[in-house]
Length: 111
Length: 118
Image (spheres, rainbow over the protein chains, first blue to last red):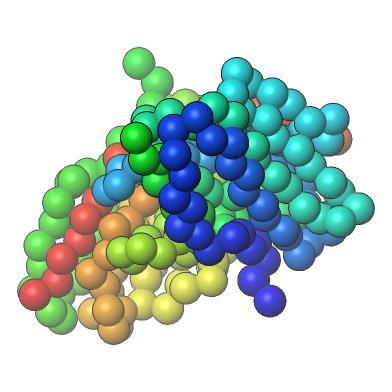
């Protein structure tokens, strides 16, 4: 089993749609969780950190469920510019502090 | 400006040659990471380091070597033992969690090095 697993995608949605990405992680001791965005042939950039209480940044909402070891990202009112690959990232829970990336979910927002 | 710099952006090498990719950060981060990304794939961890003069293997360390002689620098050498070295290589850095805290531990990335072996 992979340490971090994501929906494989791709997701193809119309502008204005709401889309949700899911991610599960295997290490119950993991400490920190993030969503990154990666555009084609570019480096990943932080979209948002994910906190236990859930957090929102404009059209983006992230949720963490520690009991189920599950992270989600919700994008409301999708824009063409949201088209990218979304990466779920987990900071390892042991003393090694490895940053483990999911394989990413590709989103294509169409006009 | 603080940041993380990888060089070169593009690199071409002949098969059988070792090549070293540079990664420098001036963010005063303790942790540094090297990832490999193949087309259409996710990031796979090659090596990581939490402190000067110490580093650990990631999931795909075979055929690679690193050093961490300075806090700011974490160069990656792709050796001739790496069977399929052509890929996009990404370096990242972050602070380490302190005590029970976990805030601001996100990683910052360099722009990457595209290595092509011919």
